[in-house]
Length: 476
Ligand SMILES: *[C@@H]1O[C@H](CO)[C@@H](O)[C@H](O)[C@H]1NC(C)=O
Ligand SMILES: *[C@@H]1O[C@H](CO)[C@@H](O)[C@H](O)[C@H]1NC(C)=O
Ligand SMILES: *[C@@H]1O[C@H](CO)[C@@H](O)[C@H](O)[C@H]1NC(C)=O
Image 1 (tube, rainbow, N blue to C red):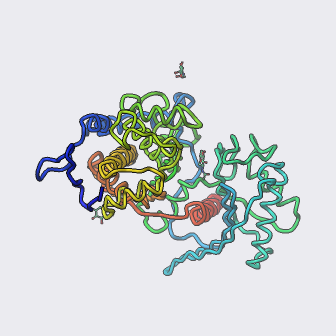
Image 2 (cartoon, rainbow, N blue to C red):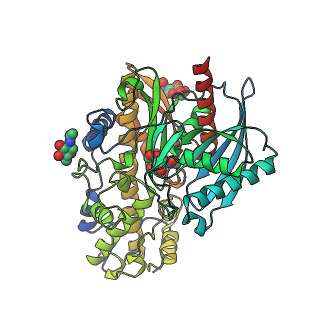
Image 3 (cartoon, rainbow, N blue to C red):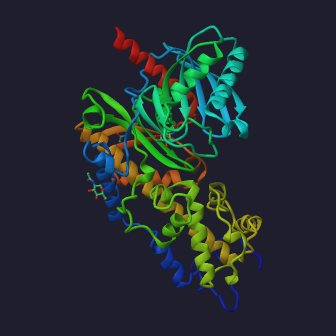
C-alpha cells in the first residue's frame, strides 16, 4: 500500500482510523512501551541512587564492594591557559594506532596546532609478544618523529591506552586485561608506561618523557576546559557511556591527601550491577543483558549507550512480531540478527524530517518488509527507547553536577560539561532530552553542554601539558 508522508496511514477496511485522530495502536503496544516511560519521581530516584553509588565508590571502606568505581586519575587540575610547548600524544585502542604532535601556544593568541599520522597494527603484532607490540609502537613513533623532524628533542608524551587499566599515578597504568582482539603476551598485570619506556630504550634512537596515561573521558573534559574554564565534567555518550569530574581530594578516600581536587573516572556504566536499577529494568533489558558478552555487567550502560539501544529495540520488535502486531507475525532472519540496528539507523529512523516512506525504505534495506503501520510502530519503539536512554543519562548527570555544587557549598552554580560520542552527536533527540532532564532534576545548576572532540588526541596532549605545569610548580 502507498505510504503518505504524514503519521496517518491510509484507511483499510479492517483498520479505519477515527476521523481527525492519530492512529490508534493496539493496546499491547501501548502497554509494552509504557514500561519505558519513566515518571519524574522514578528519575529523581535514579539520581538519588547514583549519588549513593558515587559515595560508595569514593569511600575507603565501601570502595571494594562499589559498582561505580570512581577511579582516581591523578589529573589535579584543568588547563589554566598558561600551558605551552610541544607535546606528543599516542592513541592506542583498536587496530589503528595514532601518533600526534600537538603544539600549544599560550598568551594573548592561544592556539593548538596538531599534526598526526595513523598506523595499522597488524593482526600478528596484536597477538604476538608484548615486546613485539611495543617495538612496533616505538617503530611508528620513530617514523613519525622523522616525518616531523623532531628526533632530537625529548618531548613530553601522553598515552591514551583504551583498555581496562588501574592507574596508580599520573604516569603508571597497569593493564588489567586485553580487550578488542588484542592478545599480546606478557602485558597483563604490567605497567604499560614501563613497557613503552623499555621499548624506547631497546631502540636506542630517541628519548621521550612519558608524563601521563590518559582516559578518553578525562581527555574530553580537558579539551573542553581549555576553551571554557567552567568545564569540570566530561561525558561520553556514544557506543559506551561514561563520565568523569573534578572531585575534592578530601572526598576521595582511596587517595592520600586532602588538598585541592582530582579528576575521578566514574566508570558509571556499571551503575546498577548490584541490582539497584532492577525495578526499572524491563524484560527487554534483561534479554539484552543475558545475550551480551558480559551478562550482569554494565547494566546502566546497557540502558543508555548506542551499542545496546538497537538491541533493546530489536528485542521489543521480536516480541511484538511474535504476538502478531508487526511484520505480519513473521520473524525474519534479519530480525534475529544481533546488532542490526546501529545508532546510525536509529538516528535516521527518528529524524523528524524523515517521511514514513523513507522509514520503510530503511527497514527494507535491513531486509525487513514493512507495511505503513509497521513503520509507525518501529519509529515509536525507537523513539521510546532512546527517550528513556537520554533521561537516564540526564539523571546520572544531575547527580554529578549537584554533588559538585554541594561540594562547593553553593546555592546556585554555573558549570560546563564537555561531551563526545556518536549518540550525542548523531541522534536527533538524545541531546535535547538529556539537557532537559538535567535542567529538571538539578534546577540549582545552570549546566551548559559543550561538544568536545578528540579527547584521546588533543585531550591527551592537554593532560600532559597540565601534568608538566604541575610538576614545575611542585619543583619550584
Ligand atoms: C560486599 O558485598 C558482599 C555481597 O553483597 C557482602 O557479603 C559483603 O559483606 C560486602 N562487604 C563489605 C565490606 O561491605
Ligand atoms: C578509561 O579507564 C577505564 C577504567 O580504568 C578503562 O576501562 C577505559 O578503557 C579507559 N579508557 C581509555 C581511553 O583509556
Ligand atoms: C547559565 O550559564 C551561561 C554560561 O555560563 C550564562 O551565559 C547564563 O547567563 C547562565 N544563566 C543563568 C540563568 O544563570
